[in-house]
Length: 232
Image (tube, rainbow, N blue to C red; front, side, top):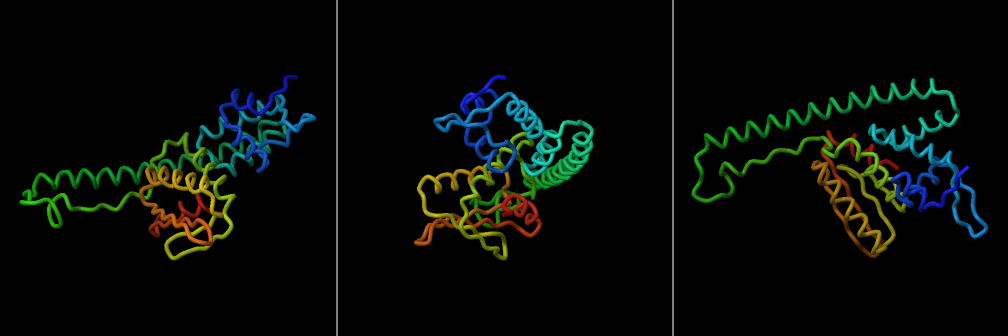
């Protein structure tokens, strides 16, 4: 049986070493053997397990659902895996169809606005009251491609392990991290990327004597998405 260090396993599977270590911490991967020097050593079963995880991620499944499937997969028989996978895919198809409906409604709003611009006489100066000064509420939908969503969810899950305080606000959540320059950079980068695909989210990053605060707000109809992504 072949053996692999974590760097080799990462190269063969496409998962980063930090993701592999995270998967171990949450039970997706069993604890590997260790060399006398303390280095992780994996075997072919880890390679097969990660292949299964990768396929589940391509389906856009949440990490908790993948963990459930992996537990069934590890038992051996295929029937229970297929049965649970069918249920999960039914739910995923329903989610995708709902997102498509929301995007179609948003497209209709944009098309209506485009048509209205043909009938509005341009003002002498562009500003408040002119045809361009029309706001549309962003759609409550994530535009991130389905295949990238599990990675984004994992990134948030890893980041939120550093939270030392959490509170619910009237419009969302507020979490505190210990002050750390590298962590601040990671929080800001992930918040910017999330705002690009979920425009209904609003992120506020504050640094004070107590640490780093991240406030995430969403309209009422967007709270289920916020709760699912930022739940403890």
